[in-house]
Image 1 (cartoon, rainbow, N blue to C red):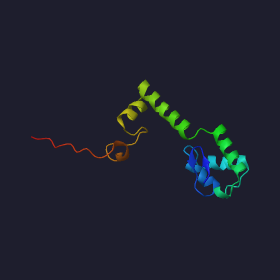
Image 2: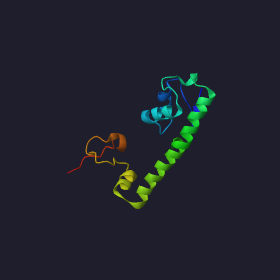
Image 3: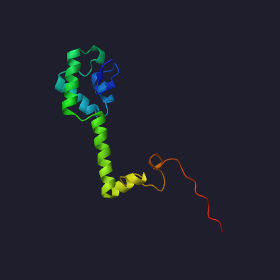
Image 4: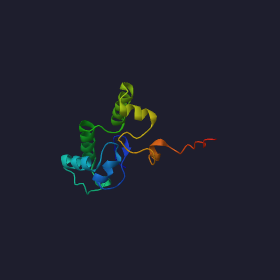
Length: 121
């Protein structure tokens, strides 16, 4: 089983298998295959050691993936919280950031419903 950026890649087509690495999508996977001159329709187990090393080097040098990317994202969110901007406050409160309605829906972001007792007269 091939291992790139600390991830065991499944035996699928190269362009699909590369998407298992956090930070690589279909477009960047196709771009990597093109730069490495590897047919994207070949399977991961069919690649030689040299080809895998070329893929590793390309990803390591040209792309921010896995731990480095997660760290950068976390630092960006922390910066927003620290400066107290609107997006930072929404992150702090665990609410949607990008203008979605919250009166209904938004359950994924807000979590499980918290029932509030009715008002007594």
